[in-house]
Length: 174
Image (cartoon, rainbow, N blue to C red; front, side, top):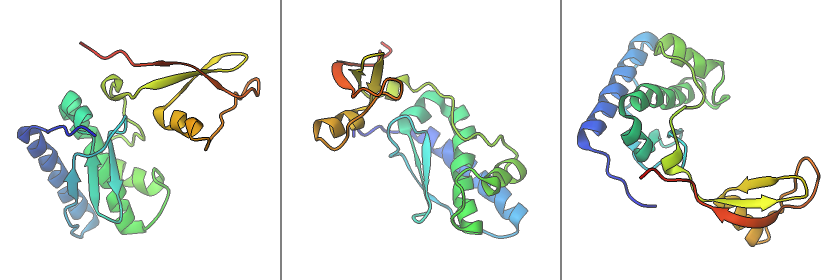
């Protein structure tokens, strides 16, 4: 993976929001929580992820740089809520009632399960496969499984095995 350096002011904005949300949670739940480790190693189209056992939040540096404040306002509370839910309730549904409670009641933000940021700049190469009735896009991971003989994909409509037609790259902004 190519390393992307997040500008220091953006890292500071992330930490300010994280600490503010942690303070909100501490006051509301009447207990203190350790500050999670924040890294900028999330890849692909995922904005962020919470590593529960490691008490770590991983953020996608490219999506953060492209979306700045809206990313911080949405993703930081989302991932922190996962950690706090794990701390308070143990292993529960990832976007269940406990997570929604932390998001809406404690943080006072919308409990959105997914982000709506443009992912064009982080989309990976797609492979075009076809069957009798249509074309299908398979990811690099799916394509590699086919090449290694570990997977065989079948069309849900016609039931025919998919075969490689061509490769395509997403249009990158100039």
